[in-house]
Image 1 (cartoon, rainbow, N blue to C red):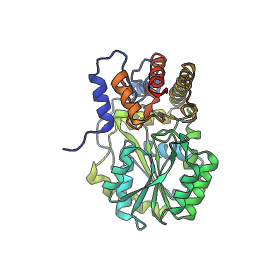
Image 2 (tube, rainbow, N blue to C red; image 1 turned 90 degrees about the vertical axis):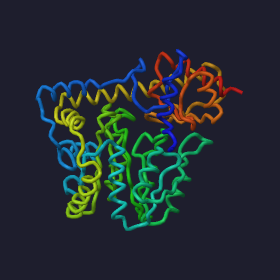
Image 3 (cartoon, helix red, strand yellow; image 1 turned 135 degrees about the vertical axis):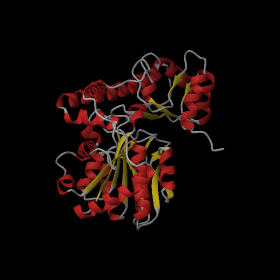
Image 4 (tube, helix red, strand yellow; image 1 turned 120 degrees about the vertical axis):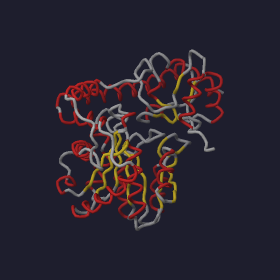
Length: 394
């Protein structure tokens, strides 16, 4: 028997718990201030328009709906990107961000001629390791997070990049690093780009939170656009699960940035040969929702406001949780709660403290101390802070 999935196991335990004060901080799915799933107003309106058109349910192409993946990469790179003008890319609609990573991994697994190593940060989303292992790569890790400072280990990261074998692949979180919430600054991204070019490494960006992190899609695309402007070729996996709330619709895109338009055509032809036996073609409904939002100025503006709503609530809960802990008289520094960004907070809680939170107070989180900030609400933040204070006070 294979071991159960760690995240899904948390939800199962939470569901069985009879404590009326229980809080699920394990799963990275946005919740409103009533701890309920939130369907974005822009998505609701887009679906109404789609239903009114009585569209058929025919297959789409192997690489999906052109209107979707063209707009997806435009959102990532900006509509003035030289890469788009010169057509030095190929994009495909995929099954969420996971599917985009998997197709990209499969492509590199077949055609990569460099070191067959994928370097992932410590820590990283656990699925990254499995995806690239299944694609035929060996996995190495690089320094990213410093548990002593509860932040980015800047010099450790630079040193690790400088020691990587040339022509190996490096996995980068574009924004809102999962699970730590620690992102490099613009200056640090510039140095990362410089080192990767000098070391002849190949970047693979995972961008799951564009617009969700800060509420601004341009700000959250900083790293990807910087690398594009610096002349890198790279893979980019995009997900619209978080920023459009299309979790169960599985809406994502893979883009491979190439050295020329001719190379892009060759790459596109081979991506198709990988997708065809894998799942044949992607689903249409979620992509239609995204297209409707992208193509209509009114809906697009509503979506921008939806992003700000989600980002601002999450940022606000970070501030309130930190303030509550200070009010309770905690002697620890909780600055990292507000310094970090995105859906998750890497609290710095130890394994035994996490166990106490769950066993004594019915607060569910991952064993590494990561909490989903989207599960914190104005109604439970006091309880969450009190419980964290109880397990951390000396």
